[in-house]
Length: 341
Image (cartoon, rainbow, N blue to C red):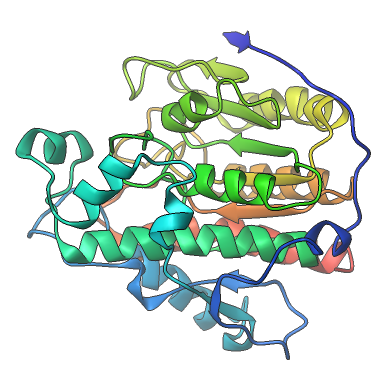
């Protein structure tokens, strides 16, 4: 089922670098300039302690970076380290009341159940670094054309509350910050291919003409109550590689030509995978790779920078899950090489 809200088309595309010129500075603790490879954004504090047997696979984040380096997909010289997202930065999306309560531990039991996380100083810190990582990846993408984080995609967070393992909406913060911090307001296309609809992101930008939200998701999956994205593609349970990729191919080129974004934020969730515990679709590893390769090559070949985040993915086998999440970085590395970036 397809639902479209609006399409806007005007300004011409910009070249990489030129689009970056009006950013005041990189949100980075450390930037390594010596590498000519694909920029990878990672922080050791993307993780925090959770209760034993918690359903969220927190340990996947460092394992993603580990397997990329172990398999020689990247080197340590390619890794950029983000700053923690400031309260001022977060407030471009989230309400002051929510940020005060979240940062200071004034989150009640009902609110914690809605997010799926018990509150801790550690969870606050990791979410802020994760958001900083997505902002940095987007900034670097504007300069280099392509960048990937090893976390991000917390698209269920709303301005005044968290939901579904999402406490701060990193995609929305990055889009809002980079949209507003430019000589003329950048247009941002959010391509959300996580198996769950990005309801928080859709809600945040429902009346913002400079941000277009595009979601391909399993219609019978979380959240039960969907929001209206600018373009929603609701697919049935059990969809496999060929049909899924055909769905993406039908809509992405048209969106790029019609909306003409200055930046694409890509949520490359791996929960459409057939083995995912919360998925319900039937994509394979190769299907995910072809999806990621298609999205990034299609965007970059049109001169539009893209920043990718890993999105959702759920499995008790952390090593297998981390390897699956690294598919987007492997595909991005191929795009980087083939497009001569």
